[in-house]
Length: 360
Image (cartoon, rainbow, N blue to C red; front, side, top):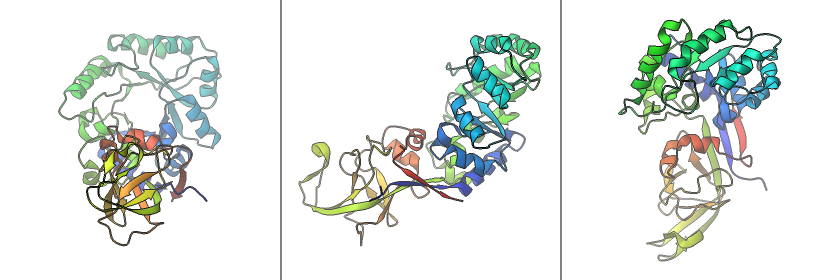
């Protein structure tokens, strides 16, 4: 019997969400971020769906870029962690990949490489994230070296990454933008700052290139319901089925460790999804699921292959009824909040056991 759990991906929603991201910053180009298998949505399928409207795509590592090139994707692909070593640089040059340079080693490798043709370079500056990037006071020297490098195309892009774009109460974003502008504005380079949060909340970060990621899959990194405000629609519906129903008397517990005890006589449904599928193991009692148009809360511990939900207040619930774990009806951010994590982790964490079905 086939596994009941599947992720249904609406490719039209992804296209519409991308267009919304572009409309929020009409004077910028938007590179569609499809790293981590397009945030769990399927990199090749998503890229093919966006290829007619997106000018470029961004991945994290070169293996992700290779997958897209092997699938026939012709548009510009940016490798955001850059590449290390002569072989990867040669592949990038031969296959027209753009690469991020974020440290001295990568800069030296690029200067000393023997490549069949130059590559497009995005120079990353660390303005406060303190993860990747050269120091701001060294960006002018790095730009000078890259412009003199025979392996670097003339269209040099300088970028940075914002650490707290989703926190509108923090001044971190404005400080990073100011630092970037102080060291970059006079260098006559192409610029890129905005991620999804900044596209929505920080118009002063909109530059030549923006980098929407989470946004194009229908979500924002904010805690409020901003998705609805902007007309975004979650592209992924994670769903399964009820595979068992049982009466549980008041005082009886459910699941491993007896972490939930019925206070009244209850009807408990078992659903074919668990942490082996990517459903969060730490989902608390009360985490919502959606059954027949109504909320049914998770009760008891999440198991490897199953969860249990309380359907006492629902009418006409039967084995085989569809259960939505997250999707347009139920934001993944809600599930993440109830599990002490973020929606990014949940949608990228679906395992191979979960089949993907695409709606075009």
